[in-house]
Image 1: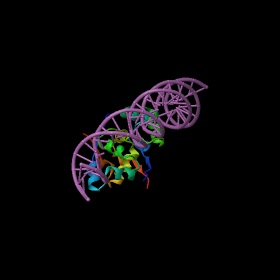
Image 2 (image 1 turned 180 degrees about the vertical axis):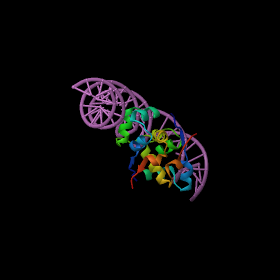
Image 3 (image 1 turned 135 degrees about the vertical axis):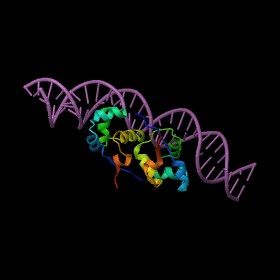
Image 4 (image 1 turned 180 degrees about the horizontal axis):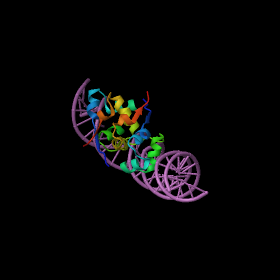
Length: 68
Length: 68
DNA sequence: ACTTTATGTTATGAATAGTTAACATAGTAT
DNA sequence: ATACTATGTTAACTATTCATAACATAAAGT
């Protein structure tokens, strides 16, 4: 089985008026880490995915979208 | 910000009549990895969390539960 | 033109997810 | 009692996430 996913972080940051750095500070990671995640550079941890989703006021599936 | 979560994997395995090894095979990890995740030994990747959720016929938030 | 703010990108290193193998235990079946 | 199935646990190893620093670009303001 395989699961690919993309994300709506950039779009939801704009909606919540947050820079990459703002979001990074909220979830205690580096700005570069947010940038890399937005671009799909790596498969982040579930804990971080939950933190990002909360910081963006969304459910996890509304931020990270499984491709079909 | 911090997010702690637990999971219902063991319960949902039973419901779907899957052993740890069955589930491990479905999502291409080791049996021990499933065991460790069930016991909360580590913060698994989002991709694996999606695979496990699908294999258990559930949404990710119905498998991994954020503590409040 | 110069500065400031937001983001892109790359390289190196540290921390941790997941592998592999090995052995232990408990439950169930024969 | 013995064998088989499912799970627990541990230790050492590999792979990948995330940290950190450094430098680059583009846009907006002064």
